[in-house]
Image (tube, rainbow over the protein chains, first blue to last red):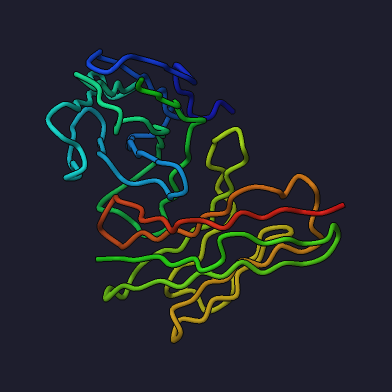
Length: 118
Length: 114
């Protein structure tokens, strides 16, 4: 039973560079989420996909951030022109949803990508 | 808007003892789900247990159980027979019916002492 995987696990970059993270959800899961977690905080919602459609974006997701899920399977999160404030853990989660958003639908998380912007 | 409050930044517990981690929430919605996740130092968020707003019985899952008090809007996590491997951050979270976003608290760091 393969869980959610993320790559890379760690990324160090210089300010102004672009970075891209990948997330592979649990295979039968149709919903995929990206969260950001800064030190001492809980994860904060960034965006959500149902299959290949990006259905919700948080106001935290500035125009330097873009996420895709081209074939409804894996997803990528790109950050352009990185800033030191982008340093955080980026978590991906997936769930199996039917209709709407049942309150009990559990999101399963990957190990995260730790980004450090110098 | 939903809000989760975890007032205990850190907790210590002796190995084999039980510990309660507090969580209160705020929402005007009637149908919602409450979750607890464990985050070890490796970073992965591990799902532990779920309680629905309409569930009349407290959820249990192995050594984990919830003390759900709907009128007080609290859902405290009880870990029985603590083990050294339970040392981690614990996050309380909420999801409202019809929405995909999960709102998390700031977490409680639990340390199990041998």
